View 1 (cartoon, helix red, strand yellow):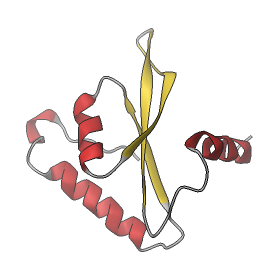
View 2: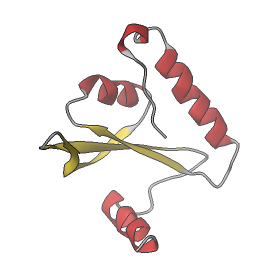
View 3: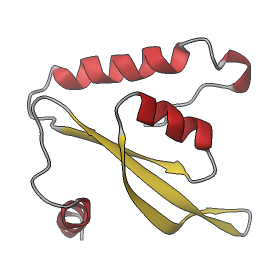
View 4: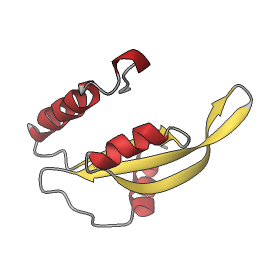
Length: 102
């Protein structure tokens, strides 16, 4: 899923409505305990937006995005929902997920 608001409609509360709707949908499924996302490192407005909406910075991944022969870092942010809580480090969790898909 991609979440974005084009420039001319920013600062009008649309992003907040979208993120609130995401929470509402996810909270209907008790098995969903964690939401995470990644943002290109130079998108400081998006990072501030997610942090303002209770997402926490988990990790920075070098060379994640490749755009027009340039590489950029990804900032990984996440939030626990439905009573979820950290049981292992983010790195351990990602290794476990990657093993499932290899």
